[in-house]
Amino acid sequence: MIIFESHVPKDNADDVVLLRKNYFASGDRVTSTDEVVDLETSKTAIILNAEKDGFIEYLCQPGNKVSVGEAVFRIHDDKNFLNSNAVAEVKSNSDEPLNFKLSKSAATYAKDHNIDIKSLELSGFVSLAAIKNAASVNLGSSSFEGKEDQQIIKTSIDLSLSKSNEIAALTAVNATGLVSTVSVKVTAPSPKRLQDGILRDVVFECSRLLKNFPLLNGFYELDQITLYPNISIGFAVDIDDGLKVLVVKDANTLSFQEISVKVDELVLSYLEKNLSVNELKGGTFTITDLSEFGVSTFVPLVNARQSAMLGISAIDDRTGTFDLAISFDHRVTEGRYAAGFLIELKTRLEALLGQSFMKEARCFRCSKTLAEDREKSGIGMYKIIKHDGSEDLICQTCAAGW
Image 1 (cartoon, rainbow, N blue to C red):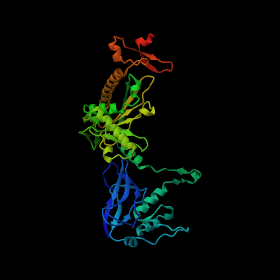
Image 2 (image 1 turned 90 degrees about the horizontal axis):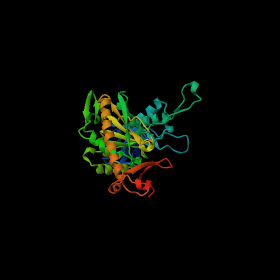
Image 3 (image 1 turned 30 degrees about the horizontal axis):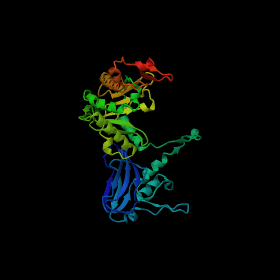
Image 4 (image 1 turned 45 degrees about the vertical axis):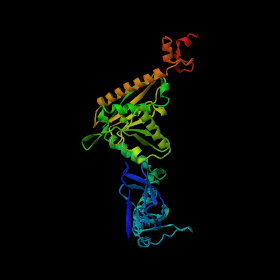
């Protein structure tokens, strides 16, 4: 008798998850607190407990993609469920015995669809759902198409769960054909100021500016525009654990220092692979920063349930400028509105960078700051081009050779 059945929970942003690991084999005795299944989402991992004491029956195998709401395992009060549901063990042509049994419905399905069950990676008690999944995965490896193509082997690669969910999220808005992109150039008085990146500055300024541009902090759905009451800025990271969008919650209520600390904490959690679901959901506006990759310009793609995404390009050392581009959903707003946001953001960032430049400016020879030069009644500093082609500053005294 079945005393418990577990289904994929809807506590993440994905409709499909990946079953990474079954911790037992079908027929094993488990207790209510045992961890029995490891599920992977595009955001994080979900561990399912047995919930009841009894004998476990797995309905899916590792590597299967399972939809939200689909049954993953059952708990029985008696181990005899294996005998009542299973057919005789399949015999192998080799001396090595096969370590799985098929349910009657799974065996019938395999026979009706001419499936070579010995070629599938199966173990324990195999249900109908499990053999369907295993068969579909096996069929995706390679194929011949037509007699004229028999010399051409076409190999296909299964999409990772994170890539599948990324496609779903980006398709929701961009597939409408109603997404446009506008961009501006931002002047950085000192390229050195950007060596550590400008992401924290952009998160801070966007969090303040979106209060004046609420249409960029919402989304279109079913002929309605929904505006988020909060401003939570997501920023895309793709280093060594796949693409993730980390979210600074209620960013408009945080100081610049608090935002800087939060960004660093999120990136560290990403690198250590211990992000929580809460740190990856709830974003209302997204920033993607490709500046470190030397990308001069690109077109961001808008996430599901959002109306815009901002892209940051690399600085051009020759001109001292970098591009900001915003893609937006035309169903929510239009180019003039998005351009107004970009121009205001450009103005704020240039003012911020200018202030930083004034504070950090110093003679490359004597290290005198601009403030110290002013105190000594100096006229300021000259911008020079060194012999290696780089630019720097020199005070009047050093320039005169005194």
